[in-house]
Image 1 (cartoon, protein in one colour):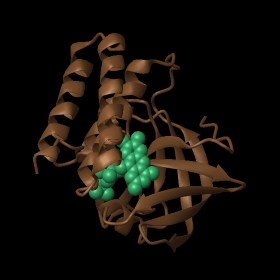
Image 2 (cartoon, rainbow, N blue to C red; image 1 turned 120 degrees about the vertical axis):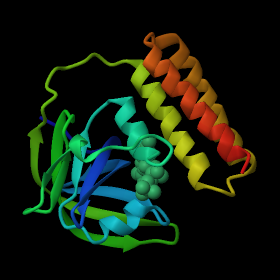
Image 3 (cartoon, rainbow, N blue to C red; image 1 turned 180 degrees about the vertical axis):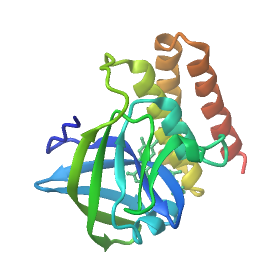
Length: 204
Ligand SMILES: Cc1cc2nc3c(=O)[nH]c(=O)nc-3n(C[C@H](O)[C@H](O)[C@H](O)COP(=O)(O)O)c2cc1C
């Protein structure tokens, strides 16, 4: 079962049904009393879609590939319909390979200049199909860090100066940890792909 403590920002993948199409994106979230909050920058498709969705789901996972495919949908193969469990009647989509699900109910959105703050109630928290506990590994967390900063380089077209340097430094620092802690070729290839995407975005 997912444990969501107050005072911690967690990362998960939010899923939703847009019409009959499932959609998934990595987000940070935190709990405040009985509410769950998600801050979404304007301009992302997820920001506009979530405004129209009553019951999104937070999918708990540590799989770097799921983060990669949902953060960079067009640059990767993205997800297929088979990656989701879809309940059209309830208007809810889940990731098939998540460790746990937190089903949300929209309370409201507060729009600020650059982002919207989405407030939700928790309808249900339950286990997913992946139930074994895997020890903490810096391999996954470093890959996910690389993906986080890569999304910043991609989204902030005019990211410049110190902010850009800090993002690139974080990507390289995490890449070094990936090189030490990920032994399987798939993860190393993933890290190289993220680096390549970043290089391409810098050339825009
Ligand atoms: C682990 C992780 C957490 C993220 N958290 C957020 C977040 O809380 N808010 C946000 O606006 N973007 C966040 N992002 C970036 C979005 O996932 C990214 O911009 C995504 O490409 C947006 O997809 P879309 O254009 O399909 O909406 C996060 C990315 C990762 C990898």
